[in-house]
Structures are given as C-alpha cells and as structure tokens.
Image 1: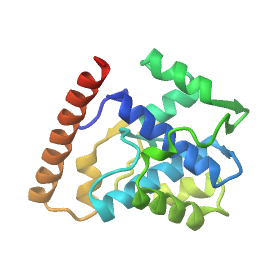
Image 2: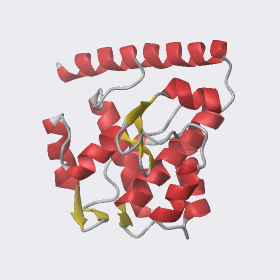
Image 3: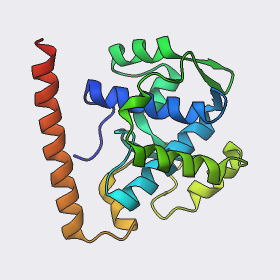
Image 4: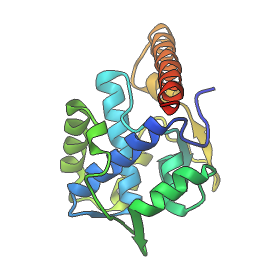
Amino acid sequence: MDSVNSIKSRNDQKKLIGTVNYLLSLNDGSLNYMKLIKLMYLADRSHLENYNEAISGDHYANMPHGPVLSSLYNLIRGISKDSCTQTLWDSLFYKKEYVLLANNTEQFVDELSKAECETLKAIDARYKRKDCFQLEKVTHGLPEWKDPDGSSVPLTLRQILTVLGRSAKDISLIMSEKKAYSNERSLFDKYASQY
C-alpha cells in the first residue's frame, strides 16, 4: 500500500520536522501553514521528478484546496494518530491563527541532504511572492490533483510518478527500492533503540 496515515519511523519524524524547519528558516521562522503545506508538496514533487524520491517521507491526499502531506496536515491540526510524534511536534512548533512558528528552526535540519536543501530553496524562491490561495491555484493545475468533492482521497506515490512520466517498470523499481530502504531503516531503528 502506498499511503498510510502516520509517519513510520523516528527517522521520518526527524526528516519531516527538519523539512518544516528549513522552510520556516527561509521565511524568518514563520509561514502561513496552508502555504507551508503547498510548498512542501511542490518540493516533494520536484525532488521526485529529479531524484525519484521525496524529501519529507510523508504520504499524500487530495483535498479540496489541493494535494496535502497527510501526516503534516494532521500534526498542524493537532490530531496525529501518533501521540509521540504529536507531542514532539507540539514542543517545537506553535500556531498563531493561520501562521506556523518554530521555537527553533535548526532542529533536525541536519537530516536534509544538500540536494534536498537546494530543492526546498528553489521551490521557496519560485513561490516566495505567492500566497496560499495563489498556490492553491497552482496545485489545482497539477495533473495528479483530482477534486475530492469536499472530502479527502489518498494520492499515491505511484500516481505522482505516473504523471511525472515514469514508466510502469521504472515505478516498480522505485517502489521496490523505497520498500527495501524502509525495511533497512526499520531494522536500523530497532537495533539502535536497544542501545
């Protein structure tokens, strides 16, 4: 299955938080959270297009305002099914109306590669002057977005890779590599937690 509702590992938690912090650091430590979600989706999509992997480690859904990162959306709303991750998130970020602010924008940024930082920086620069409603129009123009009619519909990695022009064979290879990496990461996390 390509989509689930929670972040799978501690490493994925750190990566998602590092990604949020990096984007917030490019915006003086705060950003409209709808815009943040759009920027992160566009960055993940761009990184998928260039490197066959996303940055955030999150899963996606089509919602009325465009594609969203599912776990990120739930963390911002304070309704994550993973209480440990929600507690960590709440200790690092806070909201003032529709603005997300960071207590420390350096937390877990070291989880990002140079290429990931470059992708995030490029997406931020490209859309710096657009507000969340303008970005909604941008994401509504993407071929993978389908109107969920007031609801939420999972958007799989396979669907995104397909609209990015990957062949079925390439997608199977990418998905196999992603699964193998995830399994290795889980084993490493399990081993590391024993020490």
